[in-house]
Length: 73
Image 1 (tube, rainbow, N blue to C red):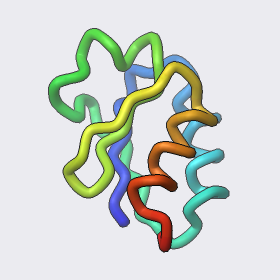
Image 2: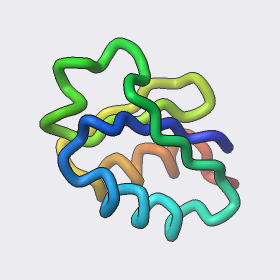
Image 3: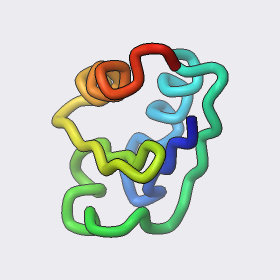
């Protein structure tokens, strides 16, 4: 699974660590922009998982949304 993150998020290092713990086999890429979330990505965690854009208010909720999309990852 390929997860792309925006580097404009204020807690990007913490978010990256949590994602790597939750999904150890996935590839996590930090880009300058992941497209379409430029207003949201500074204030809340957003990710693009295999081409699907996912956003949530908190990091834990975003991880749960990703798990719901890919239960066997």
